[in-house]
Image (tube, rainbow, N blue to C red; front, side):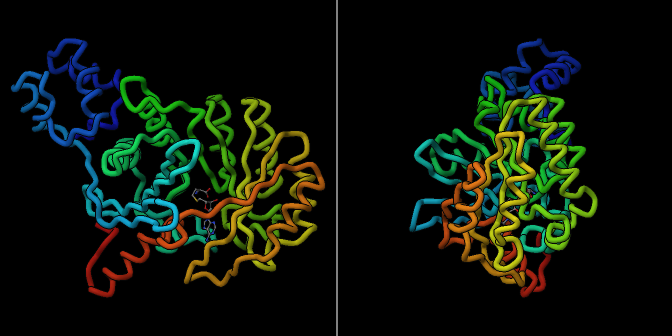
Length: 350
Ligand code: SAH
């Protein structure tokens, strides 16, 4: 079956033209799909014969809510979606004063192996299709009854390890006949895949690039992030500087503070030294306790922030949302997997 929602409007138009349909059908079908219809029968301005023909060859992806948690503290909503093949992924809806933001997943699982992260423990199962990334925005919007204005690709998975599908998704979500969410309202977070950062720079998109830094020295970074053994800190910062040169866009560096591992003053000094020459911004994140991880949250956030600022580096401490609902990524899927494993069933691998 063809995954019709992953097609661009141009691809749809030529697909329908080959079926003998007029050119305007592409826009019609695209508009319906991006409103979140789940069957061709709902496309009321299409001839019945065409609807039937499409239903025979195409699948309209539509995840179902496997679990949903709503934070009593701040209204953050966490969804565990079940996909067409039984795999599950997470999406988080966060309500900020500047608008509603969804944090979406880009893969089922992750193969990057960061030592502190719950999403990677069971490895990667598969990439998400463009439609499946779009669906997270679309169906969160429909389920929660709110308009979404911002997207962050910071859920489960490594977006630059699923480069083509992520770019196709950006194209879809950006389209004026679809959700029409501007690139300046989208952030993409990477653990530091250097060729991906360079490829992205060449496209000169207006999105915000976030780099999960977590350590400015290769010894520490290789210990907690295996990707550093392929692309070390020097190579990573060289790519970040190239990215800024090409796009003119400020990079945001994510930094989860781990007790006794990456929270020393000399590491703040080294971050400042490496960022010099571009307008970087460091986002200090209180480490989320992951049951399977040996790392503990640092108590030096304020001191570290001060140290960075003393070098003229902008540093903020991320406000934690949804603390009562396991809102950090990968944790809900993990929990569901464990419960299923306990019941000798198979979830996540079909
Ligand atoms: N693969 C991408 C995007 C997904 S992770 C990336 O690595 O950037 C989203 C962010 O959450 C990353 O910055 C990641 O390093 C961070 N993260 C993962 N586990 C965490 C934890 N236990 N506490 C705090 N941040 C965590």
